[in-house]
Length: 505
Figure 1 (cartoon, one colour):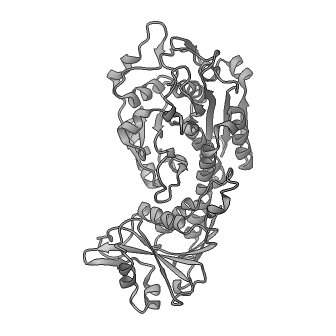
Figure 2 (cartoon, rainbow, N blue to C red):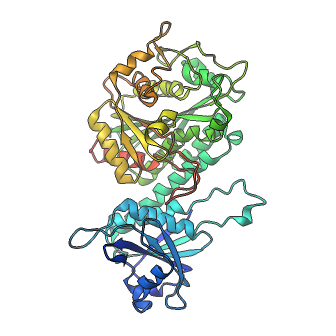
Figure 3 (tube, rainbow, N blue to C red):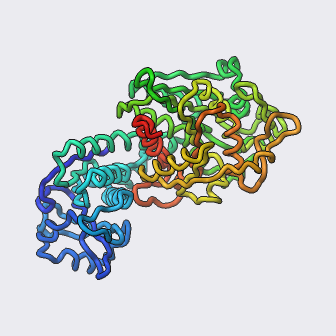
């Protein structure tokens, strides 16, 4: 992974391959953002005019490259747009997500460079953290399967030097260390999501999760198909029975100490979703390797929690199965017995994620955690309701839903609170079982959330994140987000763990 170091050196004299500055579009035109003053001096006050001459307007995430012609230690100066300048009086501070995306955009634009200087606004610890996170998030590439085309794709930036007057500040250094840990976890989730499903069946996925967990000093327990059958995990087994590659349930535990609050994370791990006998159209299967994005997120998040040494106990549960059509696959009208005994009539085998999550939610509830958060690429209805970049938040507690929204906002992830309308629950009443896995066709994302709620232990606080769209970017890269796996929800989960540790949740 790339690295970020802090320096209080003058930007103009920094010996790097490229130097990044920020520009904004103020009321009177292009304006240099803080951090660029020394560079403008080296350009003899003509930096704004030069950027404008090359078409720069300062709009968000616009990139303009200009040769320094020896004016700076870097042969290239890169002006990245930050949008409108802050209007607050006194010392202006920049929106952290704006800085994150700007740094990520610059990092992507400078792929192939070994060393890059960042002279973006970085006067506060929050700004320093945002620039560091954005640069590291943007410096990502998945190269595992490139052979003949490898030379055609540039490697990410190797090292960033973030220029700030607070370079020696302990809090600033700690923020950069946290950024390295956090983004390493995001990259782990991205790598897992990007792995072809032929090479990541449940057993291999469980092995990869175990390796990542043990590298972080965590304890791991893996239940194979025999153990799942013995314990009665009917949801996981039912979904996985159509595949020649059997399911798994992975439990990863981080313990800070006795008496500490306990956070349970549950992530959907469908390693490939064909829809089963309720077969998806072929175009809808093209990115279904990403249907394990929730499991990847909780696995990655707990490794970050461990490396950060947070004062909270965390258990991550990752049910894993491959949903395939075959002569042994579950059928519409089958009834599954979920762990704990509740029965589910399967009306649609493509509504499989909620079945494996039900098993894991019941099991997680047995430990009576202070909070349960599940993460899943659960419904196509999420994309219809909120688009491909905004995840949904549902919860059995209004204050918790708000708290998760605020945590996501602080972490820089787009999420939006959604309701769980009680009137939709009756649509899942079954004539033969305790509940059906499908209900009203309208509000399908909310129906799925209500289904999951039925499997949360009584009196426990629970939140559900539907990340169906944000987990996989099938469009061109943007900001710090690459094409393919995004690592959605990892940053939010780590932020939640920090807040539980601090007693805020």
